[in-house]
Length: 317
Image 1 (cartoon, rainbow, N blue to C red):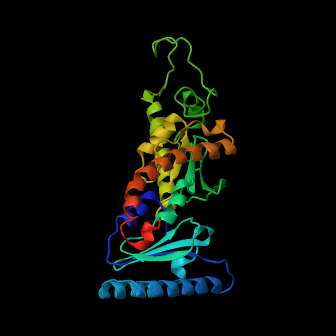
Image 2 (spheres, one colour):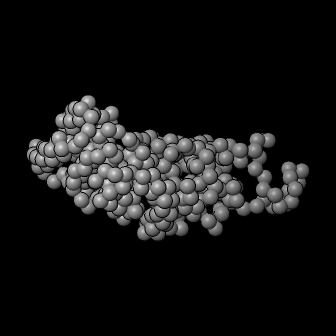
Image 3 (tube, rainbow, N blue to C red):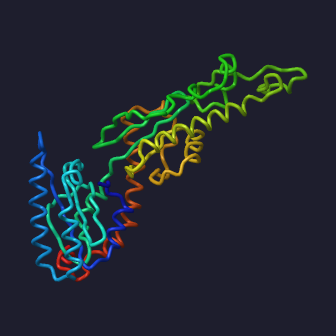
């Protein structure tokens, strides 16, 4: 089962086969052996078989689609959001989609019927929010307007998990102007006028001739890389949109360390400590809504091509 996303929708919209079955099902809640779900699936299969039998399609295509329909089982359809599952079957394709829609129906034609899915695209989809600062890194799952913190394996809890500095070094300018820390919280200060070690008023970052600012920069980049790699692994295969919330410096480091295809472009470039959870949720959702509008506009033309192509089911929309 795959969550609905614009890329998947475009792939379905451009599918062209002798016979396409679009099956929109509601899976009732059930306990024990989940007989309710099995009965719903059996009834949906029966309705689909009747629609296929009435279709004027190539015999080989009909046989292939019927076999794929028969192979559909409980494990394929259990677990959809709001217990809604859409199944798209062609002679060489079976795609089960977790989506939100209002109708339950069966359609057979030369193209998949996708109109019921458009309402899902208009909504802000479930997404993940990565919140990162030097003091803390955490991942939230946003579902139905609520944030739930996730347990992410191998993700460092803070920069100190990967830092190589001694306590004495950390008391210096690492907390000052070079820091990716809390705004207006500089704890390091400028050095006073100096002798041969450096010009007046310039912080002295060298210890024993070594500029440890370079080490701090390397630690920050390692931290950013470890955080995003752990998040990517956690989200792998889910196609979950990811919104990044971090200050500008750490935001850039994390973004340059990843090729996660569903990372939302803009994100929130603001220090997380300046935001309460409601603000965090709302800003992340606003970023995603802007992206959803872009996705929806990009998908619409190709989705429209799958409608009104002469098959009775599509032209009804």
